[in-house]
Amino acid sequence: MDHSFKISFRAFSKISLFISLLILIVVLTGSDSSANIQTTPIDLNKSSVSNIPYSIRSSMSFAFHKAEIEKQLGKADITRRMKGYSYEIRNVSDGSHIFIMYMSSSYVSDVWRLTHLLSLDSFSKITIGESTVSDVGKIDPYFMEFNYSDQQKVATSEHKLDDDGVMIISYTHSNNTWVVDSIEHTKQDPSAFAAKLLPEDKELLLEDY
Image (cartoon, rainbow, N blue to C red; front, side, top):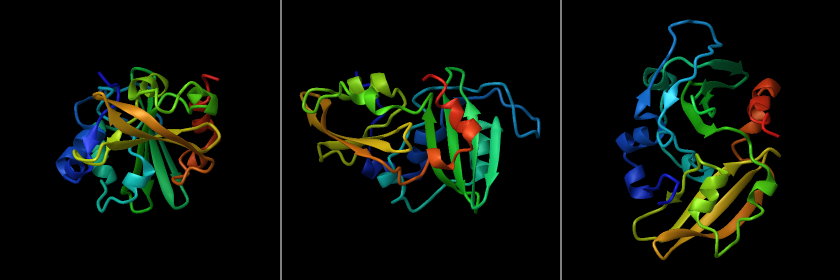
């Protein structure tokens, strides 16, 4: 079975399904403390939060408000308020972190779950035409393979890198699985995910190196 979480663009347009991609099946150990920094990890089913490629998220015509996120996930472990944006970090019991980015209007602009930022070398053994989503899942267990429609046998995924760039992987469907069709290293993440983090928060994602 493929490790990634799959969904079609047609179904994805439904708000209720979008919620399930981001924040359903949540079990909380949330704190009522008003402090910005908490220490108790939340316990979250690993397929509940999907890392949606920037090319897809940027085309969405709706976004969730911070109040809805807190209602579903409880209070953040770390909250940062920056000029023009803010972000929250929630620690998951398996050692991963959920980063939720907000626009100045307090609407969600990005949601990403990961244990650490990946290196270019992490993908050195991924071979076009041979490697599958299962192979990619061994490198990045929280990635989402996004299938554009039930009819189109193409998909894409995005992976955050420690050089502030991203790896974009495209797939084609063959023999009942998704096979890597192309790999593209973009040196500058269009969402500027890592660049928006304070040094101490980025350090959380570099500690495995």
